[in-house]
Amino acid sequence: MNLVFLGPPGSGKGTQAIRLAEKSGLVHLSTGDMLRAAVSGKTELGQKAEGYMTRGELVPDELIIAMIEELVKAGRLDGGFILDGFPRTIPQAEALKDMFAKHGTRLDMTILIQVADEEIHARLRKRADIEGRSDDNDEVVRHRLEVYREQTAPIVEFYEKEGILTEIEGEGTPDEVFERLVTATA
Ligand code: ADP
Image (cartoon, rainbow, N blue to C red; front, side, top):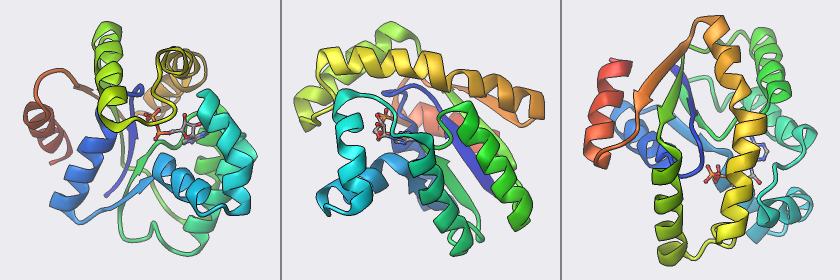
C-alpha cells in the first residue's frame, strides 16, 4: 500500500505515520526528519535547507523534489510506503505524479488529518516547551501555519480531484486517532 499523509503542523501526522508503519510494515519517510538529518550532518542539502527551516518556510521545491526522486530511483518506495511531509506544494504533487508514472508506482490513498486551528496552536506551544525544536517558537509556528494554508492546503483539492483523498478526524487521544486511521486504511 502506498500512502501520503497530509495535515497541518501539529496535526499528529508524524506520530500516526510512525505507528501505522510499525503495524503495517510500510516504510515511513518523513521529509522533515530527512532534512533535519541533512542539517545535522552538514551535507550540501542540509546547508541549503537550514535557513528556510528555521524561518518556518518551505525548502525550495527543486531541492526537495530531487531528494524524493533519488529515493524513488533507488527503489526505497517499492515495497509500500507512508510519505509524511511530502508533497507540500502543488508543484511537488505534480512532480510526484510524474515520477510515479515513470517508475510505475501508484498512490493508493492520501490521508488528511483534520485538526481545528486553536487545538493546533495549543499543541505546538506544548511541543515547543517539551522538545525545544528551533522552529516551534510562537512566531515561527504562526508562519508555518500560514505557509500550510497558502501552499499546502491546495493539494487537498488536488488529491480530491484524483479521487484518492480520505479525511480523518485528528482530535482526541493518539489512540483514538490511530483507531480511525487503522479503520480507514483496512
Ligand atoms: P511539521 O509537519 O511540524 O511542519 P516537518 O518536520 O514535516 O514539520 O518539516 C519541518 C520543516 O522542513 C518545514 O517547516 C520545512 O521547512 C521543511 N520541509 C519538510 N518537508 C518539506 C517539503 N516537502 N517541502 C519543503 N519543505 C519541507
